[in-house]
Amino acid sequence: MIADSVGKIRERIDLACRRAGRDPSEVRLLAVSKTFPAESVREVVSSGICDIGENYVQELRVKREQLADDRIRWHFIGHLQTNKVKYVADWVHLIHAVDSARLAAEIDKHAARAGRKIDLLVEVNSTGEESKYGVPPGETEALVKELARFDNIRVCGLMTMSLFDPDPEVSRPVYRGLRQIRDNLAGLRQENLKLKHLSMGMTGDFEVAIEEGATIVRIGTALFGKRQRR
Image (cartoon, rainbow, N blue to C red):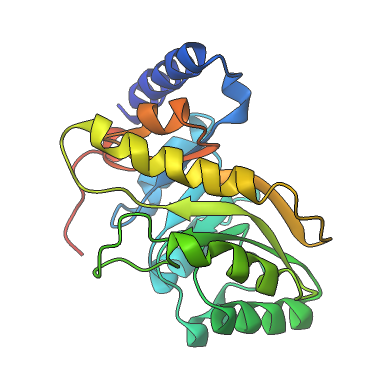
């Protein structure tokens, strides 16, 4: 069943890329496995999806231990508390939601101890909702510049969440705005800035996100089904 879902999503990604005149290889499908068991993740990986995203550190650590599969690239996509950074610093592939220099400093510290650079994205609160984390759009450039001064992290792009609305077109201006912010930062030339990625779009609106420039789409429900209760 999951294999069939992967195939259908791949087809939809290809069609969205075709409409936008993009190469489908530019778009990474990130499987969001929050609340689903390790066996479901194993099935996704067997279907060729090796980028796996989790929202909670403890759940991420447990699944990594259960699967012990070197093919998997683990993404942390939730709100990361500074006291939890130490638990993922040795091996996390990409942290999607950094919205403060304080959190970045903690990541930098643990990255130095682990002897590696950690890739991250800056989370932008594009909708202005108080319930969401993220830096305001107008403060994004200042934060990106501040984060670029750390030696052991690499700012690889931006991430955002749109409004929850059944009409995917509602998300279009949100995603277009994030792309414009990223494009406006293209002139920054600092070693630790590689602003390649736009992590935006989920099950209900990922095709619109791709049309607006997404390089990572975060898909949960369309792969695994309705989310289970924690």
